[in-house]
Image (cartoon, rainbow, N blue to C red; front, top):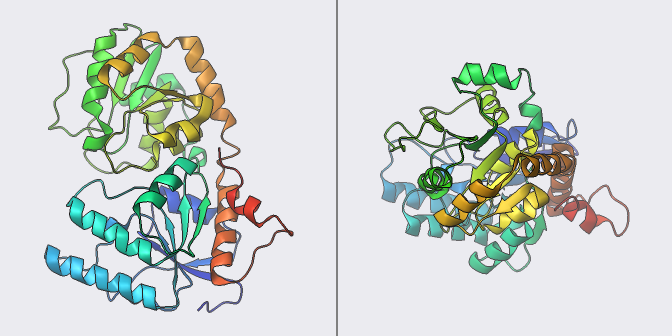
Length: 358
């Protein structure tokens, strides 16, 4: 197991990304040693396999789908027979892309070997428990998604950022941001925005490619997602907005990283009925019914005063979604799973793991 007493050897899958960098960067010095999976899929010498997005494990390049799937499932079985403890932060119900049958099979295989599961909302926990075959003795905890405020320091004024991005100034700007996914329903967002017809509003869209169709509307500004963006560019796009729009649909989502940007920048969200958004954002969320007409009515009705109140509510969430608290609760869970115990007083274990959720 761990080569250094008191230090846990943690293998995250996949490695890197804003979420893991923020989480492990907030861990106490010496608490964990972060490992990377080698090409031979050898998991021993690891205390915790911290699973995030299972479909992003690439194995070796050039494998045909059948061989890839066979080797991946064999790896999961190998992990299940090993001393490694799997802790899964369940972001989704299944992958957003690819063969749905394979995605379901992959998630079910990982669920069967999970020692502990981190859910990012109580709503998400209920959904995941109803759909995935977790072991009866697996631990289930709710630890919220942290915010990315520290990754997005406000270094320039809004006017300077608008000039940098080529955006005309406007009183109210909404953002449909992030990676392009069909399940984000950006086409619905653009249609609803046009239908609302507010001249004092602008919609910034980055969750599209150059091939996607865009309405002929000067109030809709598109910055196509061509390559993965760095945090400086993401920060600029978020910070010129007054609120974000998340019309997420389909049967894959349990959470969304959009809340990390929204809370970090102090922005409210116009959200689809996905239970995660309302639970996570609270008063910093306006929920519409998932339809184009419902979102159009919300665009048409929101006032600058209401948006300002939503921004204050989002800022108030920042302390509860700080990575220091999330890292502490995650480390407590790791120690419980490997039998090290936790550094809390009697009767405080559940509060330590579950505390800070909204």
